[in-house]
Picture 1 (cartoon, rainbow, N blue to C red):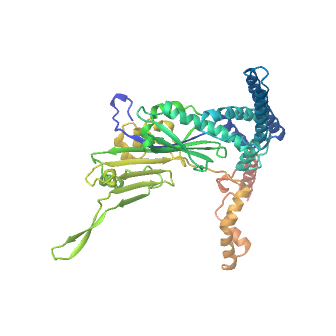
Picture 2 (picture 1 turned 90 degrees about the vertical axis):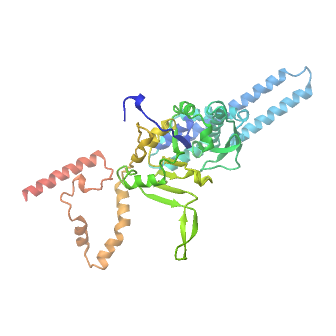
Picture 3 (picture 1 turned 180 degrees about the vertical axis):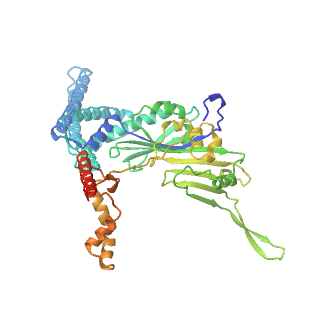
Amino acid sequence: MTSNPKTIQSIPCKVDALSLTWSPTELLRIKHLAKIGACLKGDIIETAKSDSRQRHLNDAKSKMHKEFLGLNAFDNTGYQNVISRYKDACSTITKEYEDRRFKDLSLNSMHLVNNEIAARYELRDMLKGDLEVDTAVKYDDRLNNLLDNIGVDLVDTLCCGEAERFVCRLNNVFTSETYMWTVKNNPMGRFNYQYSATLYADGVNAGIIAWGGKNLGCYVSFMGTGCDALDMARLYQEIKNIPEIKITRIDLAHDDYAGTRSINVARKLAKKGGFNCGGRPSSYMYIESGHLNQKIRKDLKKEFRFIPDKGRSLYVGSRESGKLLRVYEKGIQMGDPKDKWVRWELELHSSQRIIPLDTMIKPSEYLAGAYPALSFLNEEQSVIKTIVKKMTMTVDRIIENQVISTRKAINMMRVLCDMSDSEIIDKFLKGLVDPFSRASLPQRLNITTTEEEYLKQCEQDFSQQLSTT
């Protein structure tokens, strides 16, 4: 790293794929309630539901009175028509709330805005009341219970509102001047979201947006043309303050049009350890495709040569680990066998890491920090660390796991080795000098403070017994 920004040299890189997820603020509250084991009481739900229904009915009555003011005097037919429309509206509103159904979801704000406002009021009323807490239930079960009581349709409405606003901002805020975005609703959802729509930039398929209550939020993904059409700096500024917004995937790419750093260079760097970052060695895969070209040798015998005229590719890492580098001959892949264009492209997923939002505006720094071999891209390098997940386990869970993994070995010791139960136990416990120390218990065992104190006391008593004997 260098402290003088004037001396920093940076080779241009770009974002070639971007996927984001986020949730409306009210729905983040539902996630939090599920984590702490809270659930809504039935009377709170019914009260909030009734208040919301009454607000809709009052709005319908207010519209009826406004229509009355516009009628001519003694216009009995017009008067009856207004009354009939009011009754139909009241009937529709009541049916929607009884069936927990809001109006048809649409990306058209004229159809959505009233329902979304009503849904936010209703949900906020529910979350104001007293809550019941039951930590014995699993998180997924608690979350499903909350959604069933609140009503997935209500949550769908909030998610649809978020999606609709994002789509509106595509043309007005997030986009380069030369592009025009259009949207087409899909008949079904995508990526486990109930609803989805395809995004087009100047008529070219550029991405997808999906939303739904079961997932408590929205998902948007841009690929290739979609990323080119976005104003990344403006998008970053607009979304960086959204609570818990998350990059689930981002591709960072460097295009070497002159072919200075070719596939051969990448392979040499790999042999020198240029793709090792410590820890487990990276996996790799090398692929070349082309034709078998016939050649006549001097002895007039035929032989065939491998001619990789369809391009070569080197893959380092894997999608399963969430980090995959592709180095491939892009120009040849596009159909020109003489083109020297080579692309270095890093694909990152959030499965084992938190991807910072500023990767959107600093692709060169983060691509350079991915592997030592990529340090040529930028003197200033940013490294995204892998998250090591540690899980604590209860006594019952550890016993259950060990029974599954060792029952066959114990049976073998009994049947084939003719060992007694005491001999088997002694075999397993051999080497444990102090059975009451924390080091002699499973590392992932989750124990309470009281249990720790008990173990310390047992350890002291055990030490005293050894000293006296």
